Amino acid sequence: MQAAAIDVHGIAVLILTIVALILFTRDRIPLESSALAVLIVLVAGFQLFPYERAGEVIIGPRDFFAGFGNEALITICALMMVGKALETTGALQPLATYVGKAWSKTPVLAFISTLVAGAVLSAFMNNTPIVVLLMPILVGASLRSKFPISGVMMPMGLATIIGGMSTSIGTSTNLLVVGIAQDLGHSQFGVFDWVLPVAIVGGFGLMFLWLIAPRMLPDRTPPMADTSPRVFSAQMHVKEDSFAAGKTLSEVLAKADGNMRIDKIQRSESLFLTKLPSVVIQPGDRLFVKDTPDNLKHYESLLGTTLYNVSDNEHPIDEDTPLDSGGQQLAEVVVTRGSPLHQKTLTAARFSASTGLMPLALHRARAPSSQITSELNSIRLRAGDVLLVQGSRDSITKLKDSGTMLVLDGTTDLPHTQKAKRALAIMAFVVGVAATGLAPISVSSVVGLGLMIATGCLGWRDATNALSIPVVMIIVVSLALGKALLGTGMADYLAMNFVEATSVLPVPMILSAFLLLMAIITNLVSNNAAAAIGTPIAIGIAAQLGVSPDPFILAVLFGANMSFATPYGYQTNLLIFSAGGYTFSDFLRVGIPLTIIMWIGFSLILPIMYGL
Image (cartoon, rainbow, N blue to C red; front, side, top):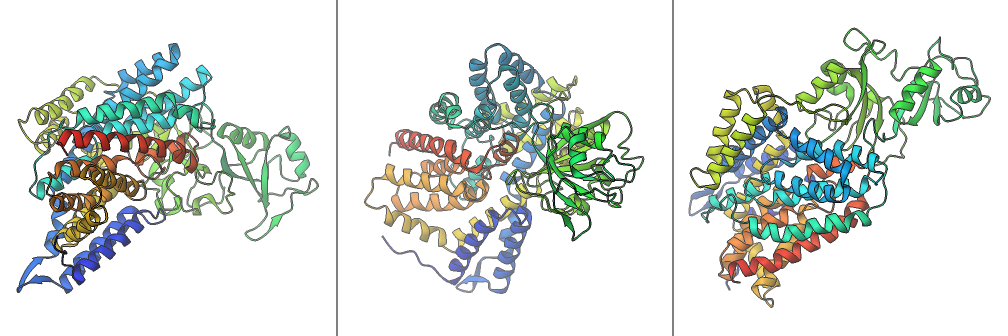
C-alpha cells in the first residue's frame, strides 16, 4: 500500500478543519459567524497561495463557493420551507388530537404510539416542529396521569432522531451525505434505500426508549408554562407608591406570607444591602427574586412593585406594550441557535420594539441556580435560556406565527385551516415523486415548494422564516472543507492511516470502528459538519480496502445522526433539554446506551447487506 502524499496545503486544511470543529462547539460564538470565518480563511488562503500541480490550479476559491449552489443545499432549503407549510396550516393537528386522547386513556400504549408517530413523521419532515407539537401534549398528559414528564420527554425527542435516519430526506445530514457522494461520482441513493436496516435497528432503539430509558431518568420538574412552570430569576422594582416602600424586609416577607425568596437587595449600581429583617426597603430599590411566573406576578401585585424597570428607556411602557391593560398573557420564549436573541442582549435585539412584548424574567437552563446580577436587558442570552415575557394575546400569537422564536406554552391550539389537507397532499406528492424515481428529490421539493406557495398553503414570509442561516452556512463550509480535504489528498491520507491502524481487523470491524468514530464526533460538533467531512474520508477508506463505498457512506450517515448523548448534538435535543428541565448528565445516561445499541445494530446489519 503506497503512502499517500501530503503537502503544506493539505496540512493547513487539516488544521483549519480541526479549528472549525472546535469553533462549532463554542456556544458563545454564533455558528454562522464561525462558519463564515472559516470560509473566509479558506478562500483567502487558496487565493494567496494557489494549489497548483504542473502549473495548473487544481483547486481554487471558486470551488469553495460552489456549496451555495449545491443540489443538497437547495433540496434542504426547499424541504425546510415545505415542512413549514405543514406547520402553518395545522396539518398535524389531527395527530396531536389523537395523541392527546390516547394519553388520557392508555398512557403506556400511548407512549409507544407517540414514539412511533414521532419517528415516522421525522422520516419526511424536519424534527423541530414535531417536537414542538408533542411537547405541550406530553406535559399536559403527565400532569393528568400523574407520571413524571422527564421519563417521556427525552425519549420522544430521541425517537424523532432515529426516525430521521430512515430516508434520504429525513434530515439535512442525510441529504448532505447523499449529495456529496453523488458529487464524488458514486451511486445515487433512493429515498427509501435504507428504510429496512433503520427499521430493524431503530426498532430496538425505540424499545429501549419505551421500556428502559424512563427508568434511567431522574424525576425532573417540567418547566412548561401553565402546567408545571420553571423557576425564573427576576427583579422587582420598588416604586414610590409601592407597599414595600418604607417597610422593613420582615414586613415585606410577611405580606407575601413568608413564601417569597429574595436573593439580594440592590440600592444602587454598586450598593447591595445585607438581607437583615430590619433593613428598610426604599423607592428605587431592586429586589432580586426567584419563583414561578404565576408567583412572580402575584408578588408584583401584592407588593405594588413592577417586574420591569420604570426608567428603562430601551423597553418603554406605552401603547404598544400596555402592561396594565386587559387581555395580557405570559409566555415563555426559548433562545435557540439561529434565534434573533441568540448571543445578543435584549437591548441589541430591540426585542420589545419588534415584538410588542415586555421581558420580565429569565431562566438560565444550564445554570438554573445561578443568580442574575445585572439588568435583564443587558444579559447576553445563550442557547437554552428561557425568557418570561408579557404582552397581548395578539402579540404572543404573532411571535409564534413568525417562526423566528420558539414560544413554549401548552394553552394555544395550533392553527387548523381548510388548507391542511392540501398541504398534506403536496407533501405526499414531493415524497412520492422522489420515491418512485420520476424525478430527483431536489426537483420534487422545489416543485412542491412552488405548489405550497401557489395554493396559499405557505406565504413568502413564512417560507423565508423557515430558512436557517446557521444551517445554510454550516453546510456550505462543511462542503468547502470536504472539497479541500479531498482535493489536497488529505482525505486519502487520513483514510489510509485509518486503514493502517485497523489493518489487523476484518473489513466488518473496520466499518464498525469507523461508524463508532462518526457517532462520537457528531456528539461533539455539528452533525452536518461531521457528515460532510466524514463522507470523502469514508470513500477513501473503501478505496483503500477495495470494497464498495456504499456501506461506509451509510456508516457516515448513520453515525452522524447518532446525536443522542449531548444536549447540543442536535437542535431538538436543545429544546428537550430546556423544556424537560434535564441536566447534561441525563443525556449521557440515556444517550450513551442508545448510541451503543444503534452502533452494534448497524455494525451487524451493514456487513450482511453488502456481503462484507
